[in-house]
Length: 158
Image 1 (cartoon, rainbow, N blue to C red):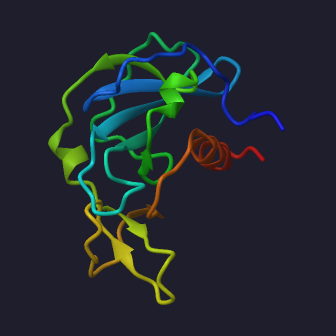
Image 2: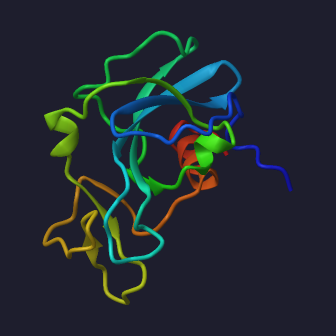
């Protein structure tokens, strides 16, 4: 079955860097924007170690060359840990690089540990959090398929 949650744009072998702003296209001519927040994650969990933390913002445009201001914007979906596949397959296209701002570094996010029977929230390093974070994803590696599914759900598509 073909993947149809995101529209492929430009494939890239360039390794994403912290601060890279990228776009993705859930509908023809509709672009949402994201940012690489952390690269080469250091984590004892093998499927997280070496991967990337990304944010997808609730900012869209019909022109991917219009560079949006992402500072202090809300997220469209919870932060997700991904590998380099979305760029290699062309589902994410890097537009430019910008520094990760203080607001982005201090965002209240975490991940639900679905391995435990009782609800447990973890930070990006796998440490137990003692509160429910504002943005909460699943603790694990997300594919471009997961990103596409979550974005389409957030914008009201099925």
